[in-house]
Length: 417
Image (cartoon, rainbow, N blue to C red):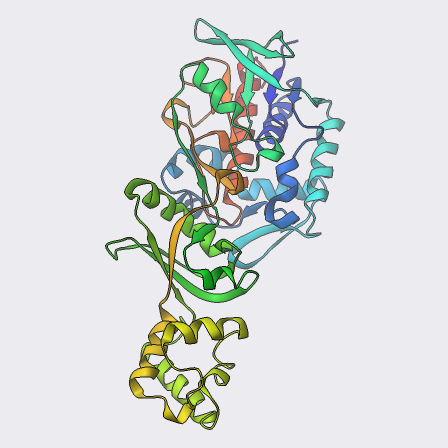
């Protein structure tokens, strides 16, 4: 019996197996690690942000660039279908801020255990500790793969090897190499959803400080707005990270690459206040602590760790008494609280990115089946494709949906339906 062969046992590969198995096809997953789903286990800080509850158009809009490619996959296997599937295998879910969907247990381990049980109970063959070395094709049809120096025939083969991010999970770019050897175009590979490095030493000295409900605006060297985000961020020993920084990186990294110039971040620590209301708030605090020194009067406005850097940037003498602060100094402080400047010098390496931007050109992939337009019987799914989204569960949904579609199409290619 001809079987569907899946190279890669991550999110996309697992759901490719599920899709193929539901049509009755024999399935083999080949994984070079000693277990399936290693990257899935660390997503969402180990909680596993499975998907997002938004409408399909909202999901598509969260994939800058090639989002429309995913319409067919998302309609074939939607976020609602995914939730129904997980609940059917004993993984109830919950919805959190921003429409993010997590397992109720908050344990990615529970997700993986349920998926592995599903696969094994349905007879999916799982081959671990085996690295595929190449894919073979003749007359524009896939013929098989090479592993351990030996050729194995296959008429339906799915590449679900991931990108270049988190190489310790097995994502080392194998799929790009396989695709390129068969004539596929690979769009430039870059880190996406990646922390950013900054020039300012004071920011690095705040490592570990988390800020909530702030707005960050990214501007290019000509002061044009690149993008802005509201939410939570984190200072690190090299610069900044956290949800809104990761999302901004999707826009900042191409600017850094294309211009070779710096990018400025403006941190608005008080986005809920307009300039006049903020000035009134500062004036109230200065009056409240009028007999204190300026350096001891900002505890109501700022986290303790931020007080010294803000005072330094304001140019106001720290020992000055609050009743001596001038209107101009007060205005300067207000501007600083809403436009705290940082200079981005670069992004962290692609190995530290959550996902890879770029990949196999979707122009060469049939969006309804994930089959190669160049090689019959060859399919691609997940991060190996040139699709990447913002944070919020979108990238995993794309892996699940494209995997499922590829699995079903590969099974039908072999005559199962």
